[in-house]
Length: 350
Image (tube, rainbow, N blue to C red; front, side):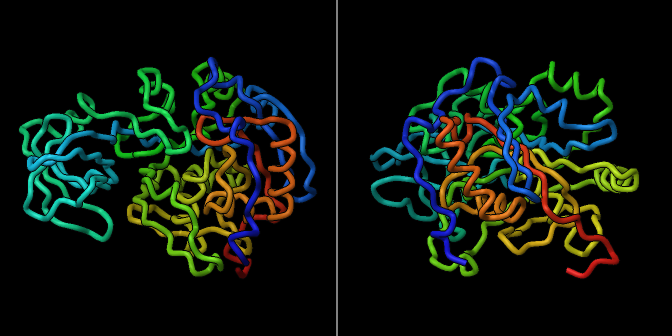
């Protein structure tokens, strides 16, 4: 299967560079993966699509202000994007400057002195030489790491809007964007209807925006992401399935979390890195439906959606979304997807 199989043309004006005034007022394109049938709704209509006993699985990661600006002590401007916080004062980061700093050198980021400890592939190992915890420093001097396709500097409103209302665990450098559509009134409506909630954690890295650079998707090397799926989540998924209800993943990050925890055939607690790459042909083990935003052409995320609802169905839905002037990417509109095949269980071979 070729990367070009997942290409589509998107007019620049359909890229959502700012959020809507109301989170749940975005549009929702519903796609039936079994039939290819499509329907147009608003996100608030989600409540009518879920039944009592269905389980929504959210990613409760919290986006950190991971972009920092500074300079080398020897002179020259520098920009850093924290990829992962590895300790109270340590992090792995992307650095952009005219000349890469050498291990052992020191730089200034947001006015804070930082030692470049070494390299880990394309990333730099940094140690912040400040008594304050790194997360506190980022809250004070960092900028929200908006995706490059927004083509703008972050604004004060992004501190709130590029964040889900249920964000809890700091560590992401990109938002789990399907969750951005949920506001407190909608969550309350869903609770009152009897929809159940569970929370996984996947700290989204900048690698989520990396394009697939190989022609054959099987040659693509997936970036690693740290995932937490607790026993409580496992119990909730199993109880939902036993009751004949649906497990609905909110976003591709929740899908990857649940499926990473289900690779043995049964879902189990998972606290580890995952490089799971989901593309057409993959058989799902834990997810019955999903909510997701519209993703970049030729990205691993549109490949995951194609695995879920079928490649032809997905590309036709994207073409219709373009024709109907949906808003794309992080601050854009959403999709509700159902799958054409049942999830695997112990009695089913892959």
